Length: 514
Ligand code: ADP
Ligand code: MG
Image 1 (cartoon, rainbow, N blue to C red):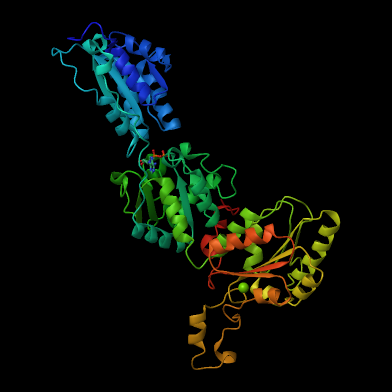
Image 2: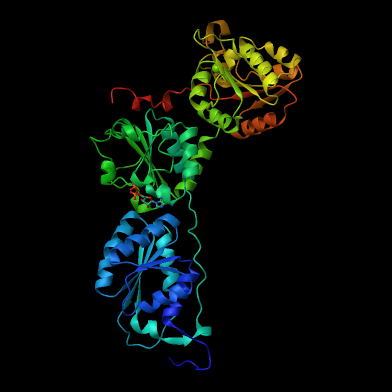
């Protein structure tokens, strides 16, 4: 170049290496040769790990796996011509897998002398990790590698930021939630896009709060652990074949999933597709709802939307489970309350659960809770008794709250209130029913008075009472009551009066006729 000899000189190779370092590249895989050897050496000098491989294809596979595992592109360094051709296999594989990758190839010398601003790296990094991740190629001319330039003349672009997080349209989220709510045999399919998106926490919540069965694709395995009770991988064919609503989280309906078509699926199965790539939506099937966005963000949106009022059994038990002290006694009675509670609330100690028992007796709960509290007080002060009651079950022995308060027992009563025995009605429907007729004629026998404030029974005797309608109120009341051991308490939890478990039941997957 035309540079001033007194200034510090830097080679093109060093510029490339420094640009990679600035972009937070940690690994280069490659097979060196003219003119890229100097780039590998310069990279090592800067502390970037260089792994010399035996074939560019393997180098490219390795670099793309770094991209998948870390979310930042791995680099594959190759010579022009045959080196680049060998790398093509790895690039195609990275593209098909949607994994970020940067391939740097050295080409022959340029005829022109001007260097030009070195913008290719930031652009390559950005296009490899933004939107749908994939492979990028940067071509470095041989004379650029050996060129000397004034160090001060070179500007490096700052490290490319992680991709901005995009969320799905609100109306699409509502649509998806409503399709899912009405599903009889729903199924989540968790793909490697969900793994790449680090969506494990939000997907686990979705699985547990909605009690959804899930199936991982090969590389979606482990996002929610394989030993999770809702994993139906052992009944894969059956799960695909009988599901009526399938939510695809970062998985494509390609050959791995039999294209989403019969006979492997119901002809009228409804798909809800969540993907970062708009072009993917509607591929092979016409989806009932499409969620264009980052999987983690989309799952959080779904959760927020589902948690809107009124709560259902699964939402309630999910939050209770999150707060339960490990060593507590659980006493439970009611119909759905006891049945669903049993499947969701985990128990780690023997002889710490008391419920309606062999005779299916309602009204045993408060007596059992009082006994458990007395035993707990003798054995290990501080141990709590959590008594989970349906609203009808609570009615059978509600006056024992006076006993609980008289002896100041460490009992937390949770009344899961659906305004009825099995099911009830909301206030408006109730009023409508009683408009022209008296309740003894018009009220269905399983109805109880809607919105009864059972917590007032506890307040009447000096304990603490809470009336909760939202997940936030439920969490806050649980937190407060667990922190305050001075008084017994009752949390009256309002849920959907018509809520049952049939929509979320997935025993259809695990019955013996598989
Ligand atoms: P699998 O082989 O596990 O079924 P695929 O490779 O078929 O997975 O699908 C992965 C999908 O995940 C691709 O369609 C890709 O666009 C998508 N994807 C990648 N990253 C994200 C992300 N952060 N959020 C949402 N979707 C993503
Ligand atoms: Mg009830």
